[in-house]
View 1: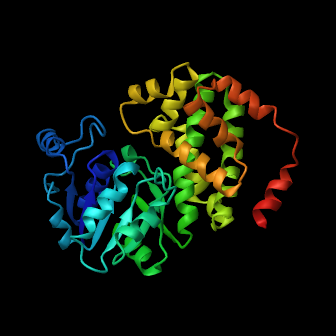
View 2: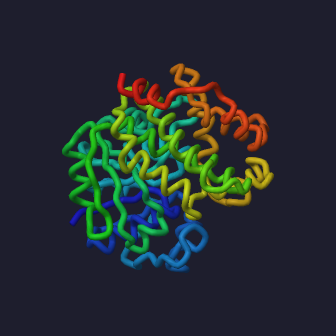
View 3: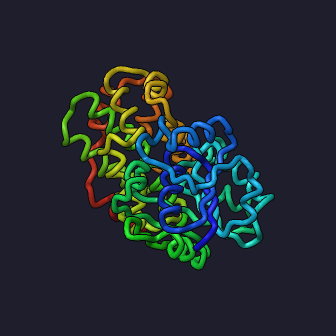
Length: 337
């Protein structure tokens, strides 16, 4: 069994700690916030983010990052804005060659970099892995069957994560398309905001299906332009994660989108959700990436306009429906180039 440090005591970090401890690993759950750790110790769970999911008392809760020096595997499970700072602090404690996995989904605000690029910069002496796929914390914590992808430029590192974390309730595939796996996991949150807005407007199933289908096409188009493989977006980290995020009430992004569709501003919706809505910042990052690469992304552009320019969801949908006529096979041809 391995010694594993999970960095971030939010819902996903707590869910992973429950799973890892049940597997028999020595599990350390890190947070820089002592008050949060004290609440978890007192309640035996994270009452706000993962109520009802009991964290075993054998999980070590700590704000001491030096404990990472004992770990064979460190897992970054922070909100996207904290990935770089967490990786930077972690680097001073890890053993050279230790494996670092990241389950955070997003892109770095400002630099437009993927988290694998961030980790390569902050953790150059370690083997870095991205874990992504349809994986709600609420279901992982309750050992519901879940399937994800571990992607790395170093196949042995991805296989180490697979060997260490795979269990009867978690199946892990390996993949070498690190860029594609990350873009699928990050950009699906934006499409989930759009799908939620459609639900909030009471528009039925047809438009949501169209948003999901055309949304994955946009994501794949950008991914191919950035060197990803088309087939990745037909897998777990692409269409798989998109489906679960656009359809489940576990999804913060979908719930925020519903509120926006019902007439609330982006700020009001995020405040009401009370947790990080990753699709909000990612929408601006993806929009900027589309401008930089010259890739056409009409859905993400309209979501950006709703979130940042005050455009109404109804007007955004009308703009999408009024776009020039196209032949669907044009998309397939473009992606195969």
